[in-house]
Image (cartoon, rainbow, N blue to C red; front, side, top):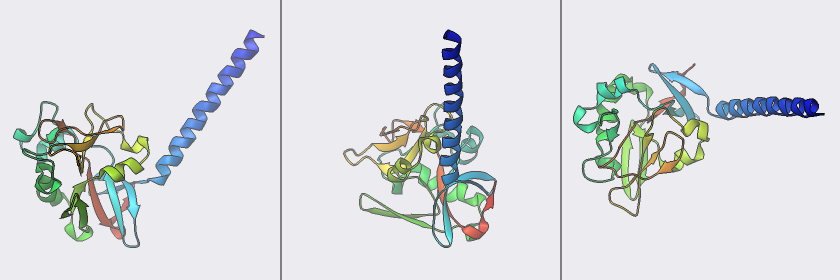
Length: 198
């Protein structure tokens, strides 16, 4: 009797493991991975002509070192959002993404993105994901490597220094823009004709 119960438990565990794999595969197929300009990206939105891409993981330590001055980094090579407030318009990350990082791409294949955050409109070729966008994504895609996660571009409205960030587990919180360091996970909008599937 005990052996039959153990056999049924083992079979049920195998079926559960298989179902979890299938669910993960299904969720990832909703957000396919594509390659663009030597980076892997999730497709998070599309229209007739363009595709919005979200970097598959946060930028690596080497990439952070290549693009950001050391004065804006902590010992783990995570980046401070700003030196004085929580506005994307004035952030260090925005300045670097739309200059040094943008130089990695053929600008003719990109389309600018307009964002309005708390009444402040910005137009960027490269930006961070918004809190609203990231909350729509499955946890598997929100997750990232490392311990401290990555910034969104969305300010916390009840504070002049809070900015929403995503922990490596996928949880969304709101650390201080100028006392905290997080990773960088860019968003770009690309012409569909420029994308190659991985």
